[in-house]
Length: 106
Image (cartoon, rainbow, N blue to C red; front, top):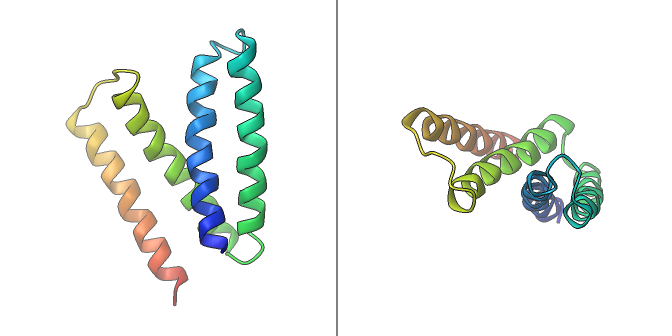
């Protein structure tokens, strides 16, 4: 169950990061409120996952899901550029997440 909590926490990190961007520096009330609400839920799920997962593994996977998810949302929704270096960076993050998941299964 911890891995499910961690995955959901990572997805919600993507949501709050996107809403933070939409809040325009916390100057727009609804995206700001959404940012804070999704942050609370994301952190709550992360804390549940950390009850049984190692700190380093849980935190790195949470931030990795958030980073790669935000990268994809930036490209797909916000029209951010797709460059070879950015794609390589995202692939390296995903590779690291896979290695950490495999290492924690042992």
